Image (tube, rainbow, N blue to C red; front, side, top):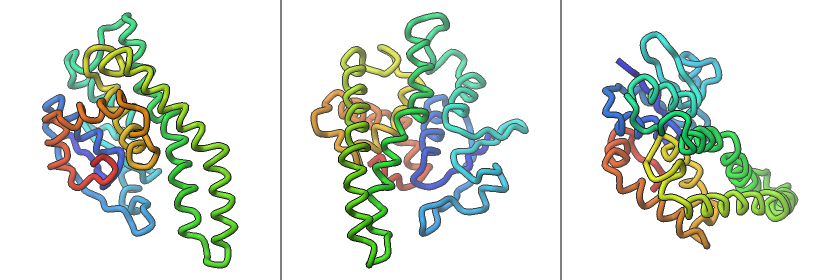
Amino acid sequence: MLTVHHLNNSRSQRVLWLLEELDVPYEIVRYQRQPDMRAPKELRAIHPLGKSPVITDNGNTIAESGAICEYLIGTYGNGRLIPSANTPERLRYTYWLHYAEGSAMSPLLLKLLFTLMPKRAPALLRPLVRKVSNQALTTLVNPQLKQHMDYWEGELAKSEWFAGSDFTGADIQMSFPLEAAAARGGLEQGHPKAMAFLERIHARPAYARALEKGGPYVIGR
């Protein structure tokens, strides 16, 4: 049976959601983050990088959210959650499927790192680290993040979903950046279309089922 190696509060929640949308049977092997938020070393037995999400299916071990999404939709989708080939919607689908990790997550990760650095710095260095972190956030990270959030808002003003009028795997991929931006990036300020997108995905029955099976998901809710 298809197995999802699921790390709590991670991108692997999207994989559970996708499988619920496709109605594909699967089992979950659970891993808990360590106190420093890193994945446990046991995941390295599944994939050398020890990261999540990872799935195993029919002798294949597949990592990376976009690759997993392509594999699952290609193997089990039967034409669902993907636009028809050689259409503008298919091109948009492919773009957003890979943009989600390739571009959108970089400023969000930097936002998280520079926010945490002062809290984790030694007490004597904390004022200096806070000054450097605030400077980086103000001059580099926050402007980039706002540019991305404005971009999402503009694209969602063109259509209900990222690839067009139909819900696709690209929306599942894009859920994590938007949820992270809502949690720590100020998405709720001036981005009503993006916030409405989050409301729509949270209302989907498959999303709710994935939460029940995956466990608490702090980033998204």
